Image (cartoon, rainbow, N blue to C red):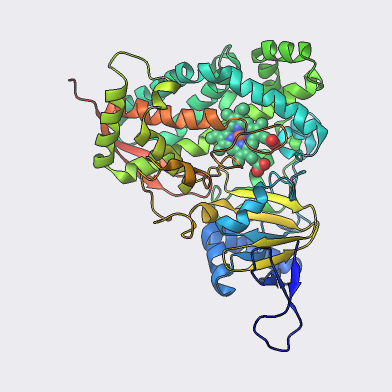
Length: 491
Ligand code: HEM
């Protein structure tokens, strides 16, 4: 892949390697420091002293602006034996992580550690399988067909969830500010399960504890990546980042969740049996639990507060434009549908822009399948087979070399001329203008996610003229608290 040519500077240095596009190939700068101690110190920087973004920006600055760097990624000891990664922190180098010919994604979903399979009924869920694994294609086919078959349920089921969230918000505002996240967390679990499988929503079938069970199960998998939940921070670091919490803690919860999905998804499981998907009913069931709770619900829990956050910050002028677009497209009294929101250019642009500014899954990992030369905008770097590659997506999607005013939320960015830019919106682990497939790792819920974002914006500005909210940025999702919701004036 690399060619050796004479050093053009004419010095007596040995021949310099050039990358395919003619950039000089260098060793990756940065470093890992002292084993054991440096990963611990870096973890504290990452979670508490600097935060993720500053952690990377400060290391870019320390290495003369290089955006491909060797860094430690938390959690580190004792959860991870090896914290070392090569980080890609610009749009160009990041794209390597989307190339399934170059990266092996086996067990890399959560980064440098792999949760116990006891949390998943003993199976390795689809999202932990590499694209080249034959089981990946079989499972992905099923998930793609599930998402496509359920698309027409999304708008009506979302309308119910949206109504429940905003009826509660309207009622609560009489007594003071109302937090969106809690309401979203509660009603989007029902939405996710009903949209994907129909049947009785979990809050009815399992009672109010359904959401708690789901979140506990997510917590036992993801606690090494969580922060700023428990004070004091040093205690939190010890409890969440040093040892794995045992799956036993959520065995009952997971059994209850699995029993719910066995019932709710029975029709889908029967069809898959008949179609001879090549996956046993039990393995498919555990995959459905993972897809519904981790992939889908976990995603909506983060994504929708970001959309509301950007709308709140943009203020009444944007709200008025969105309201007039929505109200002109959907006559009063008719339902807002997925095809109706597809004809709302500003609504669509706002949702893509929110996904660009805050891709809900910020981290991507994969191991180099072979020795690679990876190009950033200005240089090329030698990466070795087997090295753990990592990308922090917000730095890739806010890359000034790709997007103008890249660090700002520009509501109209994707109105007209969207095609070229959409290739750089990659929240779904692939470009927005390409499709999830059996042989790639792109999210099969991609169209459903974008539809839900659009439906939320459209429902919001049909119901309200404007709103205000306070926003507190937190490591996982922003906490958004409504301070006013101004109902649409009767026309
Ligand atoms: C806002 C919501 C969602 C977000 C942010 C999201 C994001 C993602 C991302 C980033 C990946 C790739 C993970 C990686 O390998 O690094 C992924 C994979 C996946 N997502 Fe989504 N997703 C969402 C909703 C959904 C929905 C509704 C479904 C339901 C069908 C779904 C099913 C999956 C599955 C099965 C995978 C694994 C695909 C594979 O390994 O080939 N996701 N998702």
